[in-house]
Amino acid sequence: MDSINRNQPEQNRQDLAGQDAVLRLKEMAEDADSCFFVTQGGLGPNRGVRPMSVREADDSGHLWFLSASDSHKNAEIEANPAVKLYFQKNAHAGFLEIEGHAEVLTDRTKIHDLWNFMLKTWFTEGEEDPRITAIRVTPRSGYYWDNKHGDAVAGAKVVVGAVIGKTLDDSIEGTLSF
Image (cartoon, rainbow, N blue to C red; front, side, top):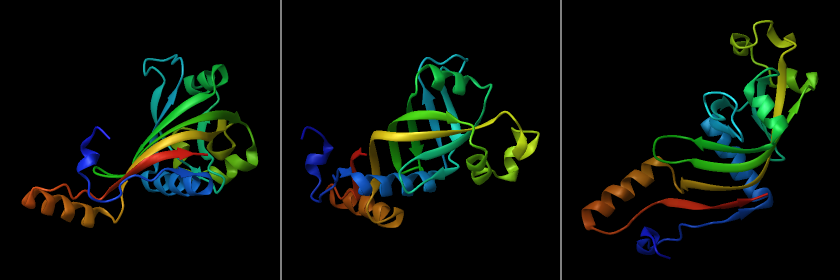
């Protein structure tokens, strides 16, 4: 491998598929709580990129969001359902990139399940606001970067590695296949 990873004495790559990929996605999405949600063919000045709060990461690997029916995002999804999501759990670990297929749904039961009072900031008529839609993202593939043993161990390994002049990185990365 032609990267810094060749200096890594530990196994730092693990590709995940199926339920293992779903578990990694769910854990990282819940820890991050929000992401950059990127649609194709952006209609507004944000060029299809916007921060979104993840309302749910379910056991099937679907990611759920709430959105307004009259938003650029919903129009962009209707035109092209391919999306990318970018998550960051914290400043030094927990990065995740997902490619998926988005669907705009008007299922009032699901909207009720995803509802939180604080969302009234955007949906001023509350949970019954007729503009509320749910977006379900079905992941297709992805890539993650994280640490194996938490931030404290990762930080200690970096400090020791710097002192002794050896790569002691606690990172783990790999593809996600769903």
